[in-house]
Amino acid sequence: MESITGFAILAFTSFFTLINPLGTMPVFMTMTAGLDKKGKRQTAIKAVLVAFGALLFFALTGQLLFKFFGISVDSFRVVGGIIFFMMGYDMLQARLSTVKVREADKKSYMTDISVTPLGIPMICGPGSITNVIVLMDLAEGPTQQAALIGTVAIVLALTLAILISSSKISEKLGETGNKVMMRIMGLIVMVIAVEFLFSGLRPILVRIIQEGIGV
Image (cartoon, rainbow, N blue to C red):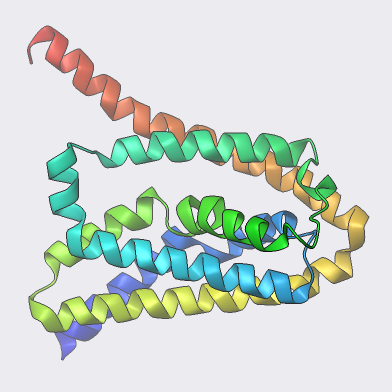
């Protein structure tokens, strides 16, 4: 029992830190500024479900998939960095707040942003994907594996609660406050993107150099 509890605590703390729902909340607020309360709630639910499905998929097949296609986590970081940078630039220019979603296009828009970039890679990013693969490999038997999946579900449930509550914050800030926050968060997201990009490129370049000199 102690080993299961310790493993669950490890999984919870690591996933909550990596998913960082408090950091995702401002991005969610700016991207859903053109939606009503019901639309924001549906988008949050879809994003969390997409993230849970992706993490469950990588937990069960991650190692085999990575080996079969020769994919590295560093490549995920590079792609995630590019996506973050493009999104951060649009936020910095306050472009996201000027998007007025027509009623006919609302369902399509909600689906698009709930999958990318909210579900993947904002909630389910390279760090959490790596973490679920590593912890699934470290899990001793089906009990700890079940505890891992349950812990992921709990963290995502907390993430959902935080995202849903963000609509109240957005209403209090108003249009001007949302624009100011979006520009600030756009700058922060671009900095995160650069960190993601270089953290992925660095080991790739090191491997290329080592292979080039025959180390």
